[in-house]
Length: 335
Image (cartoon, rainbow, N blue to C red):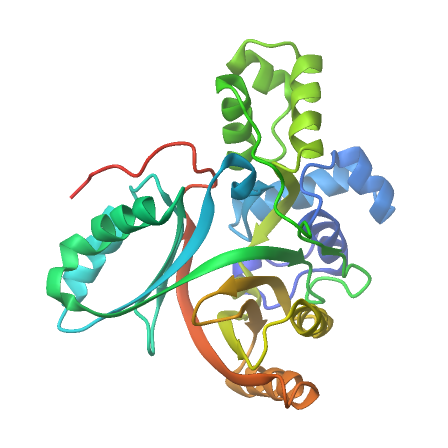
């Protein structure tokens, strides 16, 4: 194949785009299923998926879990430091990466220096986590805001292929708390690391037959513990940068938030929209190639909801990573 390596180009081939678009929200589909949906050979699908992983465009392929089904709530903690050296911030990020209660860690600039998504069972648990996170910076934390995630929608963008714009809706109401055993947690852990791991390989690890593993996965899906499977791509390799858009609404009623969510996905440049309780009512993850493009996207949304959107804060993301996909262990005292 004559296509250039991913890191040396700003666009993928049409074939690669079709494959990655088909995989984005159905990351556990077999190569045969992807080949059938894209009308390509299984060998070609395998080639592009492995190449994308080897060259870093495919960052992760993971299961999507609803922490509320396990008795946890996801909180987003925004932190601003003052008087902290670059070295002290670097050490803080390294230590925070080791915290078991942390789901996502993002390095940002402008108003906030860091965004941390954490799992907590209740307010006391959250308070303990925040104290653990902020203790190394002591008096360097000059501002902190916390939002509670109520529900989340995952969608695909138009970046890869305009024919794939599937939106994976969040559950309308939180599912009941599900009791899971150690084997379920091990299965979930493996799916968090690699959504495409085979039932046979999982079975070897948890000492169950492949058919039993498949049945357990199906039960976790039916109980909404697992709500989907997604591929996470490094769009910076295609010339895009990531921003979080924080919307403050005049009246965060479900009707308005649902309408704004749909419009955000229709832009083709948003792949996650979450509804929050706190200083931000909606949080959208946006992919654009320039500040002008980002400004135009925000203006288009604001013009459609002039009376509903009070303000939009832009949080540019320099770097972000998943630390833990599952809230299966308590945060460790590492500092």
